[in-house]
Length: 270
Length: 298
Image (cartoon, rainbow over all chains, first blue to last red; front, top):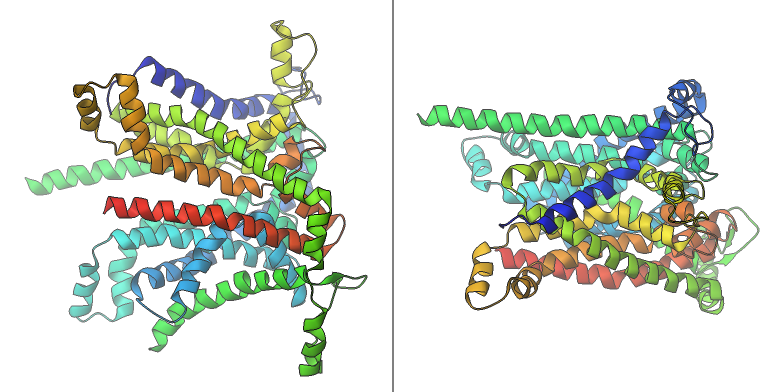
């Protein structure tokens, strides 16, 4: 498109101000001395200190990270298998049901997913705890992984796989040395997506967690229900900081590899 | 079918059957049961030890009583209607806010675009809960917004925004805005500039070219964005519980309370089944829109 007008500039400025203003406020108030979050009483980092001494929060954070790492790893394996099946396996009995089950959890309201899994765990007599949250998170995030991976699988040149098979590779070797390196970026972003979805989830975790396995979102939710708290502001600031550093460095790395590849291609062309 | 293929298909298949389809079957079954003072708190329960005789007692005990109850008690149908209303209005506001941003991104210089893209996606990676929570400190009676408005003398009395439907709308628009911007930007980005030039050469004013060409061609993106906001908003729980008031009726919240506070599992399950039935229509329409778009691209 063309002609970047004043109207465009204004809408971008206002739009991004709207997107970032609440987070900026949150970060500023996390350094507020006063317990009353609405009164500015000078700069202080004491809420960060209190946060680091709050064992309940630290325990919850540890549970959350453990659940996220385990569930996103299993989800990546299962999701990649599911994507490979959907794109490459051709026809098999129950294929429609299978693809339905992959797409349905993406649009299913969280309250329903949570409720149905809880009822299942009770029906089979599985005690609620870290295991049940991992099972729940793996189930919905594997669907996200499989959507990300299958879009990559659909766009790549199948003849590369066929060439490997013709040259005597076993199907597993062909997958490992040809397919996997090509879809690797999608698999990695699938893992990251599954990881953040798990870190973020409140509703499904609330249904499937037990008394000994409170996750960080559950803890935050029960704390902020009563109102704004400076400790939660500090915690939010740390979480926003981690995400910002992660996303910005990821985009810098992608940019640099793209530049490097361009340079190499230019040299190879010469 | 060889063993490897069976394993590759079978493992994710069985996982989803066991942890997606069967749980949903259980919800369906419990929605047809009656509440009971027992563990688990519903009846009948399926007793496999009695064999076929157990099944004979099981099926006749199921009925649609809970669904009849949903139509009789005012709370439920009012909650469904008010969720629908909130979801529709919030989707339209998000469209009005999101479209100019997507439009500005599509017309921005090429070298800005990766940064603008990153700025839209960044909030999506930060915790949903924290983004909703951040508005509590702004909209409260002594929040930042009221302080600024009082200080500038625009108002004398603090406004009550937090714990009203207005706060719910703000929360929804804020958290779902990236879902609206990205699909619209994707269609606007692919828009062929020569079409606009052709329209102007043929005597269109710039404004009518916008309405006739840009908006029409951006339609698949607009539709996709609207569904991506509408579908999750309908069953939303976090936003109405943190930003809404006691009079904010949304079905996700009702389901949660029915389950955890009232411990009425059969009614909670019936609420879930009806919510899904309502959602099937927009989901099918959304799928069709996506398919048409994919076919148009080929």
